[in-house]
Image 1: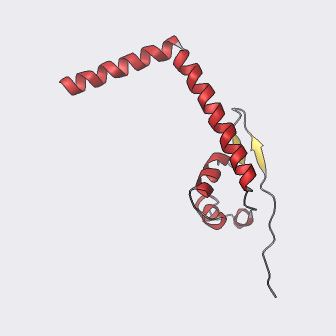
Image 2: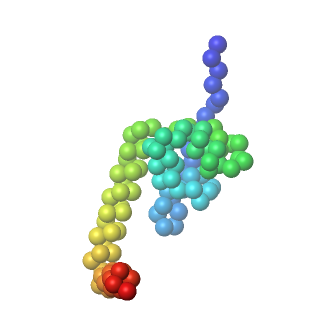
Length: 108
C-alpha cells in the first residue's frame, strides 16, 4: 500500500507593492517559481526557503500552467516597467552618467 503525506494549497497574498508573496512570509512567488523551473523539487524549495517551519514543507507544488502564467505576467510587468523607465528623462540622465563613468574607467 502506497501512502502519501497530505498536502495543502499554497496560500498566496499580494502585498502593497503588488508582489505575490507566499503565506505570511516575505518570500516572493517568483523565487519559488524560478527555483522550480531551475530544477529544484518542491521538497528542495521548502527546505531552502521554509526554514524550520514544518507546516510549509508539505505545500502542493504549483502546476505547470500556474508557473507559466505567473512567469509570463511578471515578465510582461518587467518589460512594461523597463520601457517606462527608459522613456523617463531622469533615467536617461542616469544612463548617460554611468556610460561616462565607464568611459573614464576604461580610458583612465
